[in-house]
Image (cartoon, rainbow, N blue to C red):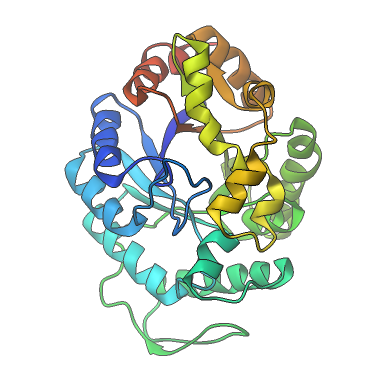
Length: 330
């Protein structure tokens, strides 16, 4: 079984419309909604910039069954990991078994623009690793004393802890983070769409991490993010998904390029042919099924579609009525 989920993208859609989207997903039986956790968007024109945390509480309160969490939160600079632990512990207490947390190393467009110096990739990895340890301790232990290289707490206790374990996922584009996902998390998140990189780097690294930690690889979730746009008119679908061109330039996930205007300017080099080839730009269910089958065969347990469709409710219904049933009966 492969789960097809949807990402509510605060970068592209205002939070009120996204709340209505979450309600629509819940009513149509979508099992999970992931929300981006950004301060700034990947594109300047026609962008939005809602805060994920207040939206999460509203979306969980306005829905009944759907699980909602972040894809992803970076607890490295603008967010202190102790505060991340408290926020998600509270959500987990209020909405047990419906909350999850995705963790990543962050991007300059969120961290630099909130007043921080952009660290090296290795430092961001170490910060993320240390933050995960602290978050886990605060969720499960009392009166935590923690002295790391980057974060310290003294006599710290979350009086309101989650009533059920909160699934924690680690985002990875390379080997180092994928190994950590195998060692320390409930699964790996990636937006790497290169099949060879997935097969030869990410999956082996996840397996290596699981082996090092004495864990069962098959118990770990493997989650792929793909921007998606559906419309019966392919040209309309393409126009709507052009918003994500900047995020397709992988260097922007690592270097200090933090201005969405600059990212948009550079993203103009990504043409419609590349968008249609790399992303899920479809005019019917058959196109979507064919493309998603290739990723399902790589061993992903969940595919998260960042819904960039001209009419987002159309993609929800297509997933529920045609794409998911076909993928899971082959």
